[in-house]
Image (cartoon, rainbow, N blue to C red; front, side, top):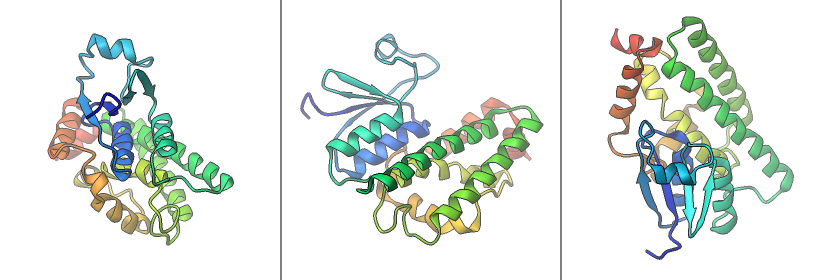
Length: 219
């Protein structure tokens, strides 16, 4: 690999890292992945990251942060384009990418909170957002139609959580999203975006948090 080979600085469970890994794979871009421990961040990482969060993408001497900026950059410089050509449609896709981040915020609360009221509110919020997403998706194969898009790449890490939630008796995904969810989970770029032991690692993380969800999983 050359000095210009992108380096993705990662944490194995981070859904925002998965976005970048999916887009890199969709474009066939060779890259290195370096996992760090977010509980013990190395000094070199703290020097590079303005926020102290992953992902980072290092390209030569340049460092990009924030997953939305990273995937936009990758889409601009590597074919095939995953964003729509039409500016208005592209703007709408960016808005739905932002909604993907809102879903992850709800999921974080569901994973970690010890407060029943916050847990219930996050579940309700998640269901409302998913229902709106289902209305927008309609019967399309991918979010934008026949072609896989950045919106698909952003939502794939969201759906990865629901096997665990369903083990806890939380069936929050509307039936109208089931086929899209299935296609995303079977796509090679999505499968390869996480380590093979992702599912047990996620369960172990949730159980260590000791929140409402861990209690439900223990029943």
